[in-house]
Image 1: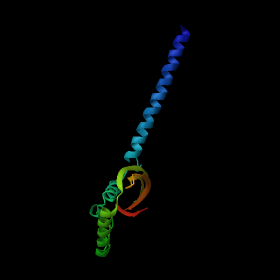
Image 2: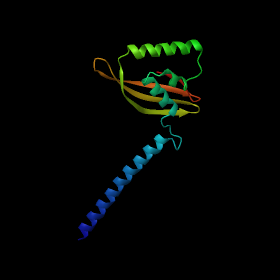
Image 3: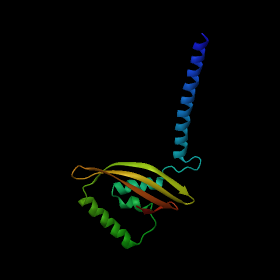
Image 4: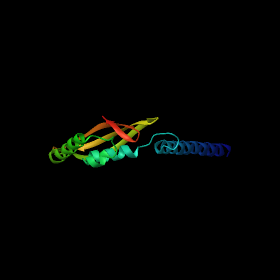
Length: 139
């Protein structure tokens, strides 16, 4: 009877430890990604830029980039139009990998999935550098 009571107590403690570990891990990941305590979740600016890039929409991308000259803007619009008509890449997925913020600068990393005209699926990473709420660089 004592061994049965002891075994039940040990099992209860083990289940409690496991449940506590899982709940605290999930809560920690949620808090880290939401940016509540200084963590860096996904930036709305970075998200808007990436969606504009995948949709080949330079007007939505220009709202999150620094001011450009009229010649640069015209070249960007012309390049987007020619890539829209000639490119046969189809966007499949956009996955936010993570990011970091220090002061007014932040870097956000994405994995982009594309399908070529020959049906080959490809993934490539893309890092965005944001300063002052504008996308300064994409690599």
